[in-house]
Length: 92
Image (cartoon, rainbow, N blue to C red; front, side):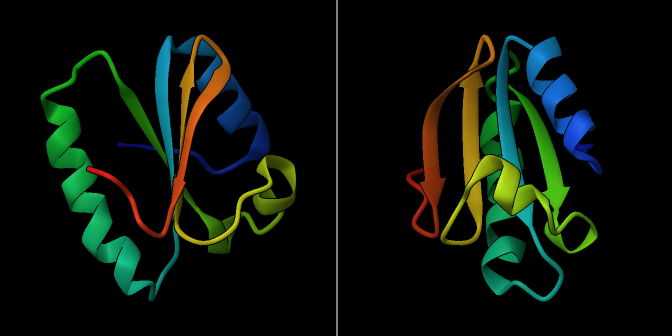
């Protein structure tokens, strides 16, 4: 999983890869702790999807840029365009 630690890093990551999942997590978030390993396991079967993780406690301004609520969200991009947005209840 690629760690994305700036708004520019997130934008570049989306721009440079064809099929992207951006996952947001936070220290102390039990949901995040349970979802992250499951996402990684599922995406091992889908090598065409590149995953990036944003630790929101290190980048609090990201919520205003990507406009996400509730927490934790996962956003999927295909050729720079957002195609899926899931949060809290993620359909695996």
